Image (cartoon, rainbow, N blue to C red; front, side, top):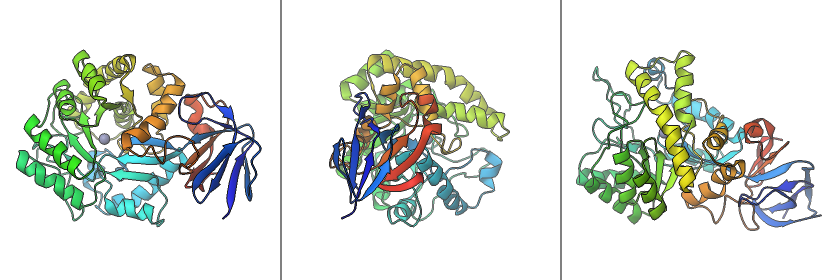
Length: 400
Ligand SMILES: [Zn+2]
């Protein structure tokens, strides 16, 4: 068995401990030893560099490449999957070796990566976002056109009432979903929905969580409105995505239930940047993004101060893929230390996805997803530029 040793560098192990000198030996895609002065069949000299656990982005849309309405209307369905090949490679280039796809990627995309047909991060897929009629996942536009057309492998996410909910979750499980995504409030990019209004009633969410749990899956909730956030927490949903209008009660509920928060601070900024660079968006969408952006940062800061568990997510796809690590700078601006932002991108993210036995920290026995970084490891603003090598299962997938 060939062994590879990453030698001469220091290790940021993902637990929050300060970086320490150490070598990492990899065999058969796993970390088999950590120590000083290790030797192996192949040596990768990382002197002066820092080795991180592979990064996570807990909220991406790999098959989404533009939010420009005219472009979306004129893009063939299958073209999205070819675009995803590029999106996945630039995600790896950013050191992201694991993602949770928050709708868009289907089982074919995941299998193509798992089978080595195309390069990409490990992924959990939600396939379609469940939402009520007129909710954030309803692609109905006012002229009557549909922006989201179901196809084999990706059922419609529009669902009303507990019976439909039960069936739709089962359909998603049948199609290979590894996580269930629901919109418990309106959102910014949907044509009409109101980000300040809670969507779906408790009776629907209870069935959703019951069915997902029975299938062994976690649930993630796009939740912006205060009411929608609280309904999601009450029903036992594992993570609140965006969390734009958190109040003190919602924060306390998250602490009591151990609910994770995936801030996606980059998301509204990417919408503004897209609009500034000429993306054609409706007046209503532009109005919504400007309405939420300040409340969003304030909410996340309050949650951070209170000690809510934070996992890194960006909503990449709303803006360009591959800029994922910008989120760390925004999380630091909102109150995390650089080390905490890095833990949110490694250990805590792995816990949210339930893969902490294999990923998220650099420990003997874990999968060898590693990122080699030059320069100051805690300078998160430069992290992306400083990446010189990315390894998944011990194999080079970017840089180096
Ligand atoms: Zn999203």
